[in-house]
Length: 259
Image (tube, rainbow, N blue to C red; front, side):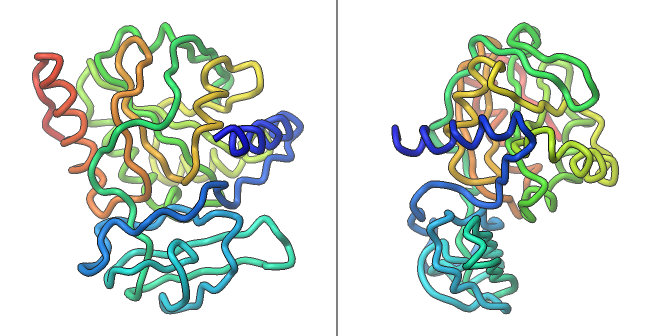
């Protein structure tokens, strides 16, 4: 993890100069969630070490090289930072790496002390978590098709959440991606908070450094403690978020939500 964090930290520093290219992740390819029954979720971005074997129609080689083991609807999307490899896409009803459609133990850092600018020029800090039982944080990029595809669903969920639960997004593109992000958010109807972190964003820098695949959605409590996460676009995002939130609210002896 030290090597991964060092690479992302360097990339994050470039973000402050508008140079952060988030076309792919930096983690090794994960094992497919289900090796036989097809995707329940859209694939997150494949690592930059992928070999570019993604073929149109969902055919290709290797775990998370645009393809997985299960037959189904997963979109094996990949994008390579190496300009010599180019972009590989494995879309369709073929074999796709499956995102996790259930919440899992968090791998992303806590948000105990942070402050970051919002995409509309405001500020959002740790104190803004304290008034909510749960904050849903979606880490995304404008260059990630599964991220963009789920934004309308996130917008609807954000509007339907009760007062004790909030949803925010974190843009991983740096300032260079703000204009495109505003366009995507506007088209999706998203009116919630979107953070644009910098090196001065405290614990949010560590959280960003922990992101291996996009989209990644993390649930935090009022103290900024990461509770659970799920990776990859979901076929039923609303149901996935509702179940994950209600599990945590039940553990807190708080009323569950109904989206």
